[in-house]
Length: 476
Image (cartoon, rainbow, N blue to C red; front, side, top):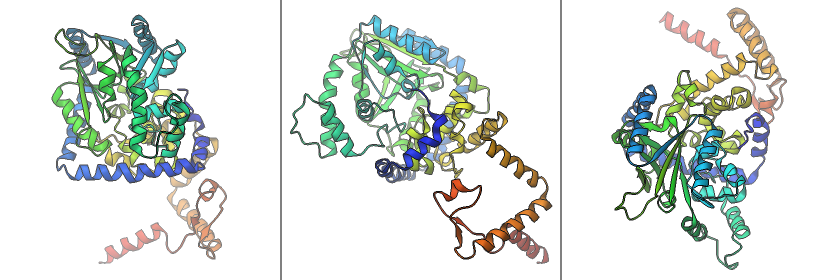
């Protein structure tokens, strides 16, 4: 996927003017938030679990080399193979080679944000291999030629009518008179097509929510069972995961899983939580003959020694974007790469550079809801501020913005001049805005007044109120 984060403002304008998208985004606000709140309220120790999960990931990141080596040893012991990839290109070539050696003509895939990050589907299809997404949301956007708009709900930007239209256009071998009016009928429609793909697949590819060093296991969580069919039916199972997915023990994995589902979908646990450890044994009734794990770096190790290390605690639950007012307004595609929402506003510039994605950390109200709901307690607003500072230092922000900040800094360093200047400005604004009470246009504030009115100053300023209250306390 070629990033378009540099065109974020154009993407935003397109999203805001897309009436269908705006209707679909209403499902994010009414669905995920209430479910998470109920799940959290039903578990008194939820915040304690968040602290434990954070500490587990911090410990894992501090000893990443130790646990990755132990994981490789356990996978090898169980009959599997671990492949190391420093870059996206290396990961693509490793997976292509594995598919080629398996003689793969059809590959089934479970949902994987890492696979999106490395543009795996395009690479395999360019070599004549059919790649079929088996997660329902991923399947929907695949037949539309789109990318995910959400980490856990890839097709949240679509409405039922669009899905029905796409199915009728794509599934030309199915009866034309079939009814697709209800959600369950749409699910059965996809199941009819995907079942044949599961059986025909030579290779199955999944991501991994966690890698467990203690056992050499990979863990995936799904609500559809497609992940299990993707792993069990083909002769070869390939796992693609990044280095920060490692945790020390099964107990650690269970602690993280307890906060993952509640934060993501409001469930105590997902319908399917699958632990995979190596290929099938001689007495196993089913399972893959080969088990491969491709562990990707792709810039993560460079983040370990920086102030952005904390973002590597992310477990891809999507809670931050579910609660983000900016995401609610523009959806995921506007962010221009794989990771949308607040986590994308930090992770994307860290991976592809602030020069290409400097707009993203500026797309925040800093309301703090993302940090408040993050199960791993990632301080996303703080990290976005750091990226804004980095953008400013590299002169990557617009010159008008840099000039404005310098002018403000000049006055802010001189409190008396600042107060006098602002008092004059406030008096002028109050006088000209007295009649309407708001401004529909102001010089240098067009970005605000284009979409909303700006209230005119009324009454005393904050400094004046603070001074009066301080004087009252002193005289008491």
